[in-house]
Image (cartoon, rainbow, N blue to C red; front, top):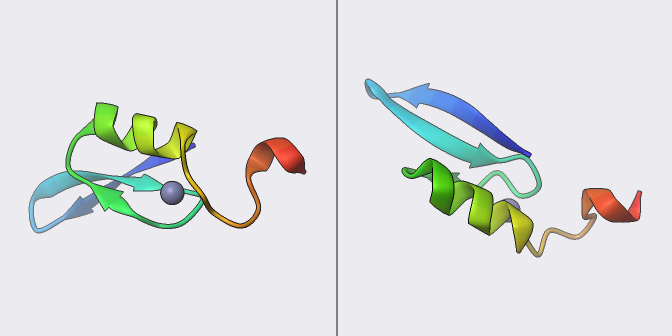
Length: 44
Ligand SMILES: [Zn+2]
């Protein structure tokens, strides 16, 4: 899932799978759906 992070007065969206920070929420959600982290949540 995507978490919101406040940094430098701006809201960022963090991929919980790999920790990548993205400026745009829709970009973050798209990334998370296609994230290549080693342990995807759907395999747990
Ligand atoms: Zn990711």
